[in-house]
Image (tube, rainbow, N blue to C red; front, side, top):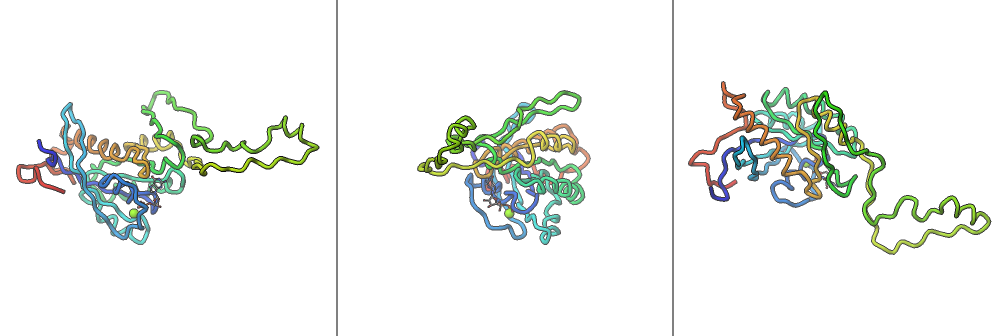
Length: 267
Ligand SMILES: Nc1nc2c(ncn2[C@@H]2O[C@H](COP(=O)(O)OP(=O)(O)O)[C@@H](O)[C@H]2O)c(=O)[nH]1
Ligand SMILES: [Mg+2]
């Protein structure tokens, strides 16, 4: 099989509120770079080959992805692109709770306007704003205890000044009670990134996904964390369902098998 050939073509859509990073995720997928993008007007398109394993066999999948506008004024255009999608990325921003709360309404839209069998992955994006490395997502099984790393205060970026740095400790405060307060040392190093608190924990996101029968992934379009994985996981689920014969009575929406004519073509 040459480098450009594929076994399946899958249609994907990316949905979610405005400014959660949908366009940046698409650019990361197709160009492997982070671009501070302009707001999407209507719909944009990108394509890339990804690999996945189904039934022990490696499959090459050409993902054709439509990036939609999240604002209310474009919502009817957005919906028209849901039709025929085999997979959907439902994206929220881990630092903005309202974008997670709107996931239910996006899901309703997908269930109403896309094919019944559309495979949806919930994507918690912008995790780089809250952590210096990707989080390990727990596998959740209902009926079993869930063990997760405690998620307390956000981790501090390495080298970043600690919150208490510069502020005198209690013992020092007592000793210096009578003296003039010493000003904090001047910061000479380049300012480090300050991490934001997460508005939705990994566990809450993963539980929501489990309850609604969605896949779940944490991403950073900026750092490239989890982006290709999101498409590969979803492609694997779609193809497993095809192999299990879930679509036996009719051709599944958004899934095309490569034939001798299309194999070897370009994007
Ligand atoms: N830190 C960080 N910023 C991001 C990430 N993804 C997108 N952004 C920023 O979020 C803003 C909105 O991104 P955009 O892709 O246009 O959002 P869209 O409206 O959902 O398509 C832009 O300023 C991006 O630079 C990410 O993973 N991390
Ligand atoms: Mg956009």
